[in-house]
Amino acid sequence: MPTKKKSQVTATPERRRELLGLAAEVFAEQGYNATTVRRIADQAGMLAGSLYYHFDSKESMLEEILRTFLDELWDGYDTVLAAELGPRETLEALVTESFREIDRHRAAVAIYQKESRHLAAQQRFAFLAESQRNFEKAWLSTLERGVAAEAFRSDLDIRLTYRFVRDTVWVAASWYRPGGQHSPEEIARQYLSMVLDGISVRP
Image (cartoon, rainbow, N blue to C red):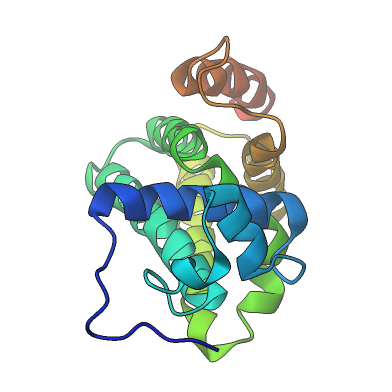
């Protein structure tokens, strides 16, 4: 497989983001294993060999796509968790931040949903498993705090609730399109109004 030579000129940051965005769309649509460098190059309007001036493999493209998405996601989540909000407010903020990330990185979220389980078994993508463990810990601890504070119902199965919230949030990547009728904040508000009416303690 061709590799980038030191003498070759790398892409500008803007061009690199553009190429990664195109690659993410192809990976999300066709699946990682079925996607070839030639297909990505075709989408970018360039020869397959030219793509190697910027990336040494499709694996490196996928890794950068997923790391960029997860780095931004955790920047947002860490800010929420550090704010030490109440459990309901933390849940609301995590859901809102999740929809913002779907808006910014819809294709990357779709790839993560479809591919992370088998990719995480590879050493190169071990960071996916670590992120998933941290993700689960953040959401479970928020739900547990809510039950302890009597903000959420005491009869909740915490792990089942976590799976429900997680899956119903992230599945939005399959239908959401940036620039649509509703902003990510509006979708989060509507979503939360449905979810929280079902798990909040009734007066």
